[in-house]
Each structure stands twice: as C-alpha cells, then as structure tokens.
Length: 216
Ligand code: GRF
Image 1 (tube, rainbow, N blue to C red):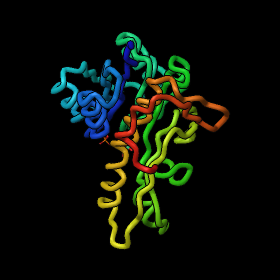
Image 2: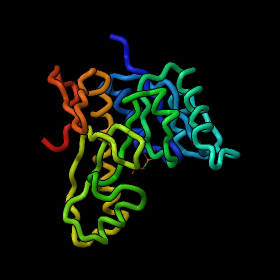
Image 3: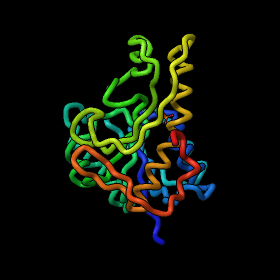
Image 4: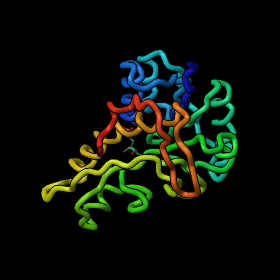
C-alpha cells in the first residue's frame, strides 16, 4: 500500500520528529517522511532529519514580519514540491494562516502539551502548575484558524505530582507526546479519521497502532 507522505514543520529540538522517525524505522508507523521544514536555520530538528537522510529545508521568515500569509505560501510551495499529503506541526513556533490551511484542508495536525481546551497558547505546563490542576497531558488536533482550537484527535493524561516543576511535568507529558503523535498519524494514514463538527471519530480497522496506546 502506498505510504502517506508527511511533511513535518519544526522550530527547535525536534524530539517529536525523532519519535516519528524512530516509529517509522521500527515499522510501527506506516508513513513516509517527505520533508522537514524549519523556520530556524539552527534547529536541532534539521540535524536529526539529515542524520536520517530526510530532506531538511530552512525557510527563513526574515522579511516576512506582518506578512504571514506570504511566508505560508513559501511553505506550501516546499510541501507541494515534496508531494506532502499530511502536514505535521511539531514544535513549530509560528501561527499558521488560511493560506496553508486552504492548500491542505483537514490535513494539518498539531501537538499541544496540555489537555485542550484548557491551557492553549504558550508556557502551558507552568500555567497548569500555577492553576493547581491534578492532571495534565497532551492533545493531537486538526489545525483550524484559531489558536489550538481545532477538532481533537487523541489526548493522553498524566498526573501532576505535588513536587512537580515545569521541567518534570513537561518531561512526563513529552513521553506521552512521543506516543500519541505517531498513533494519530497512523490513524490518518489508515484513513480512519472521520470529522463530524468538532468531534473526530476513529473508524474501526485493523488497529496496528497498539504500540502507541497509552490510555486504554
Ligand atoms: C512539544 O512540547 C510540543 O507539544 C509543543 O512544542 C514542543 C516541541 O518539542 N508544540 P520538540 O521540538 O518536539 O522536542
């Protein structure tokens, strides 16, 4: 079967990218990494791509201040050149515009380190600790025009412990991110995601994603 071609957008260390690479190499995720794109020249994620012989492209945002849609048009060009079918945002620190969303309708997904709709935006682990929540986690969702507002595909829950710091909570959440992102991509690749309004249903299928199952 033809593998879904994914394009991963990054800005930094790329640990989620690495988890996707590892799962593809292990054979537990059936997708092909077509390209990794970074808005930062020195993103370690680009280095990870190179090490695994995946095309890595730096698309500089210099000169595009206040012209986000023009920058996104550049991203669309690179993604289309590499025949990308699913756009995976993995720590990409820019707001996506309709220019990208229209080119990839219901084909852009993101991972967020909180249980949406709680704590959208940035510095969310700190915000969760300050709020005193007892559980946090992570969310994979389709991207829409809002900030972290699109239909939710999968979430994983982690406890917040009394002695947690931003770092310890972030690390516990990240471990789950690395599992559920590949799982969501596998569902997409198997054509099993059905969006009805805000609700995403996962159609039955031969579930090859058990490796990523975190919250039974
Ligand atoms: C992750 O916590 C992800 O949820 C958020 O940005 C971080 C990226 O980490 N969107 P990494 O670059 O994948 O290590």
